Image (cartoon, rainbow, N blue to C red; front, top):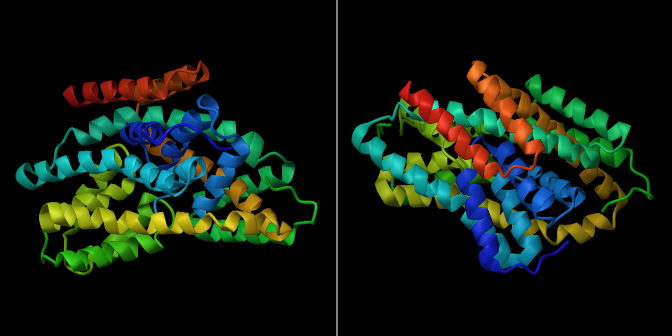
Length: 359
């Protein structure tokens, strides 16, 4: 499905999603489904699920790469660039402001309270999207079983990339020719060194924000460039603010080299994804002509739904901290069922977070 909507509208939609996107990649995917499938009717669930499967095959921030796929299918190469850049930009601005405040005044204690207010809302959005995609990514008993197996494996601690590769192998092995496919730094590195370190991280990170944290620890804490406390503060800011969690890199770059450090960290960690998504475009025709490859991608799509379900379980563990959080999540789920715009739900979650911070 393609769209004749202008570039400026795509830019505005992605910037809005980036500004609302609390809760990590699964929440971002859920918001995009609501925008482009449930409400916008840009794509059907089948094509949307296929794009999710493709993003899980490459390293980098999955939700940002999904935004790029959406932009590419709507408006080609310029759509890819604009969608990715506009989805990232609001988070980069917010994190940069907080990084400057942190550098001058130290940590802001209200951030955890705001995050606690918004997380139950994002949990409801993720659950709603997972249920909505079930009819496509788990349309048969075999695909449902694969999704459940993937969710279970991830919850038991199996690496997400291994789960996806196993799913692809199962799909390819069982295919037939009739298969359908539709904080304080110890050392200040140079700007070029920072760029190199973040390019490498952006090129190899698969999985959740916890995987990103492990890579940042290896490249910056173990190298003596930042303290463990600063890395944890950077991670908190990345998770408590809207948009991609990978803006943790923006925060770290600012602490190490100011504005220039934030810029090269952002370019380095997100830049490889633009290249990976652009390279995937020509593969669609190749995959469509090969039953085994088509079946492998369908299996990855089903496994991706399982990963989303696993994230919902993990997010529930973080979000459902008290009766107020549980009530917020249930109200948000009910309003989503009534087709209420998620924008208002996120604003409501922020209001709950403000109350938490004050009380």
